[in-house]
Image (cartoon, rainbow, N blue to C red):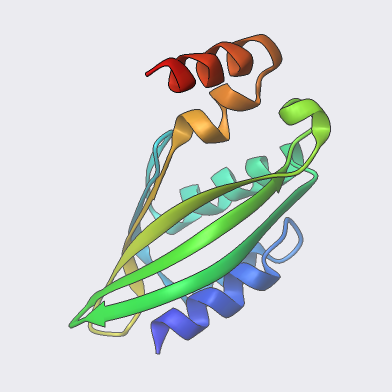
Amino acid sequence: MIIEKFIQTYQQLDKNNLELLDDIYCENTSFIDPFNKINRLNNLKIYFAELYENISLIDFDFKDTSSINNNHYISWKMILTHPKLNQGKSFSVPGITHLKTDENDKINYHRDYFDAGKMLYEQLPLLGRLIRWLKRKI
């Protein structure tokens, strides 16, 4: 089943083995997250190559899964270390992935839902303090 393959792939994925994506995505896949909209598997590989060049660590703690026909949902917690975020210390961001699969059980649609502010803006020194202060006030 695709959810198990997806989890296995993302638990192994790094800049040296992006060809693993060929086993789970179709060529005309679409990938969407709060920062990007990417079409085609080759462009997704380029995006991930750039991502892995800029981070020190990315890991996923996968939680609950659900499937209805060709729609699949996975909740997760991403653990991330980036030299320019959170003073280079690890932090986590919860999220959910929605996958759609084609007739060959390959992913043709991948959308990640997560709080972009928590991932990026709150991890920047001055802006992060301001956002956390505003959240407490609201």
